[in-house]
Amino acid sequence: MYFKKCFVVLMFATLVAVGSASATCSNATLIGVWGYFVGSSVGQFTTDGNGTITSGSQTASENGTIVNQTYTGTYSVGKNCTGSLTLNFNGGGTATANFVLDQTNKGAQVISTISGDNASGFSAAEGTVTCGLTGIKKTYAALLFGKFPGTGTKVDYVVQVILNGHGNVSGSGTFDVNGAITTSSISGTYTENSNCTGTATIIAGASTLNFNFVVAAAGKEIFMIETDSGTTVGGWMQQ
Image 1: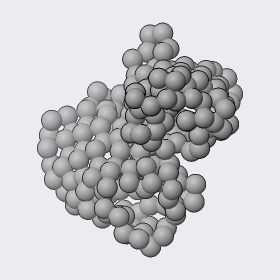
Image 2: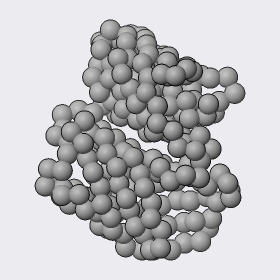
Image 3: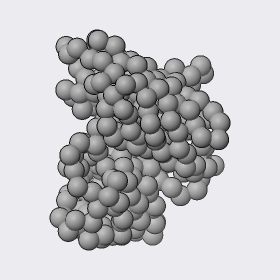
Image 4: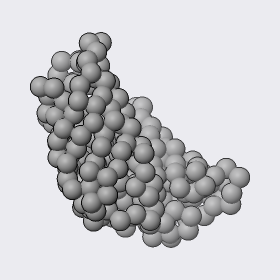
């Protein structure tokens, strides 16, 4: 249930991205494809501008168990650019959240309204971008954090990630594993689909890390979640 709550938070963040406090907003403000990161969930959804989330999918970690989910839902955006949403997961279950739009209708801050939950996050519109292995090299600054629920180990990673446009990863970073600091170069591979979702395998020292990701903000931001069992690690990369 935690991953569903996290998802809600991300969705709200996305809605927030649709507007700013000084603007006049409506359901039509939130339209198109959005990516999000919240807690231990990363995903993407599509809205119709009339209050309906027509489709959505996410990868979430439920205390270290990785789950892929799809959903539909509804949302409401007020004139003051705040709103709420409800997600209906295929196979059962719902999630709710409130949100505030920002970044001139391109981003959002979100908070779960599920009783007993404590989750928040943000979202960004996909924007105009051509996704896939385009042959164009891009360099990102990445921040990833989380824990390994089974052991209680906490991790924080700050990494320069270079995607060469042909499916190869390089770069270097600083890695904090339960307070033990190391620096290392990285290598690996990635895939990127035309719908702006993808996967990555990153090798840092003796560790191999696998991720699912969603591209947003016209290609300038990538939301990521580790898909290795026993982890709740995620974050984002920015150009």
